[in-house]
Length: 254
Ligand code: HEC
Image (cartoon, rainbow, N blue to C red; front, side, top):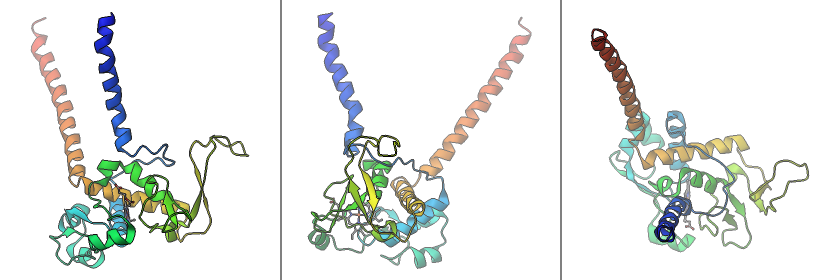
């Protein structure tokens, strides 16, 4: 028994460690205050997200693995509309989505080069990115005056502050608030100035943007999912037919 234990224990520990890995890769900065499930099947949302990204993010961030033409084809955006509304950093649809910003200069301006965002939702998880965009808060100790709950010390300015409104973070004590409403585990945020969007509109803005990023990380995914459904339907149908056939064959044997 002891002997088995000697082998079993490390194996179990290794398995446990493996199980813990995704949480670590996802950032592991404690609980995330917002839950989020991406929905790339919602074409209108992904289209709005593309518009958000081009307007608010592509000034600093590239999506070097995605071409405008692919984006247009997948999202059903005609080329002239694409050129007029989304292509700010290039005039050729075959081009990759590059940022307008020179990398070395931006490292000097922000203290970090804005990373390419093509596959960020795969490396960080969609929920991480959603929470990152929701939790910028005012902090006098930071050079740009803002900090972030999910990426503490983030050198990205709060580019959506005028939409969301500016907020401060209040440390949580893991207790119930005065009204006795549900126990707050994580920190909470208090708005100190109104943004141009309501809370609901801003949540939708961020959800659209992250849906677009999830699409960009795997442009062929929607095709594959619908193909998968067809294959499963076919297999079900085929099983049914095979069963009928078998019944037919065995009828005479009994
Ligand atoms: C003014 C330039 C600028 C703009 C505009 C900007 N970012 Fe950033 N972003 C940065 C910088 C700089 C960093 C690096 C932060 C760090 O590592 O401290 C960053 C980091 C990030 C990260 C974290 C990536 C990672 O894996 O660590 C995400 C996600 C992100 N940005 C998303 C966005 C989105 C979405 C938008 C548009 C709504 C946007 N950014 C607009 C400058 C910008």
